[in-house]
Image: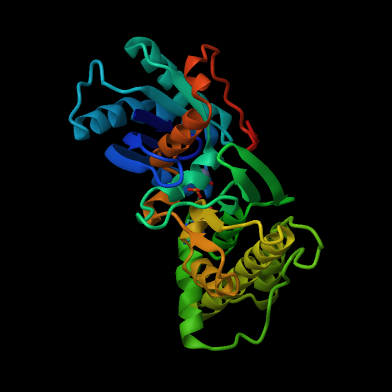
Length: 357
Ligand code: KG4
Ligand code: ZN
């Protein structure tokens, strides 16, 4: 099945052409073409993503990326032999989502191909299907820890079309907290990778920092997260100490990362325990899944659960991309083939939630 997929939910414009076949547990995924343009340098000066600017950039980039992707796949650019087009319909920034949807629907009309809406978070979940070893199919039920700039969620995946959100952030997303703390430390957007690099330097230099930031909601008795108080604790500490030397910044980055990752791992562990042996796989998806310290801590704690396989996406598939949207579309179409007959206009939904179909 050949799928052209389009992603424009935030500040990455991305188009991929995939050839996917086989069982959902371990599909055979060939990336025939894949182009991505990151607007990070454009939004850097605003310290975050500016929606109307993102929309304008997507509009400019989409035709260029389409041509690049089809050329890379070496297929006819006038009437490509694809089965359908997949496009992110939410969650994300609505002006940005609409550019992808409008572009996809125009292509669908021109090429006489169906257009299928995809939930961006399902993209992050099923990004792990790419690169699975032959003897290592994805085993469900699974728990997904979704950690990105806009989301922090624990999702119980009972089947390929049966999901339940069992925990979520009540304020900032964890990636957002990384970005905000980075800004306080004078680091450019996106802050996650920069905080992580500073924190590593501090860990290498000293064993014990001698102080800790609070772990918000760690004992709340539910599976929800909160990162806004942690961000404020960092701000107060910065004001109180009034230092801006490298060593101090590295220690702050580390203390923040220790607290944020500790909460993510602890809540994931509580979720696994609350699901009482039903889980076979722990999936981690979204930009923060690239965090080295989170990876290390998850690898450590999962050793206590030998029946559970930890599944992380390949590094380029952690942050937003169109490959994951094509994969999620394949899952959607395989579980519900009637989606291909849908003739309703697709509507962007900035707050779209993962839900069972
Ligand atoms: O999934 P993503 O590309 O976009 C959203 O859907 O939000 O995630 C972007 C987020 C940003 O907040 C960025 O700072 C964070 O992922 N991020 C990281 C790392 N790499 C990206 N956070 C912590 N450590 C990293 N290595
Ligand atoms: Zn994302």
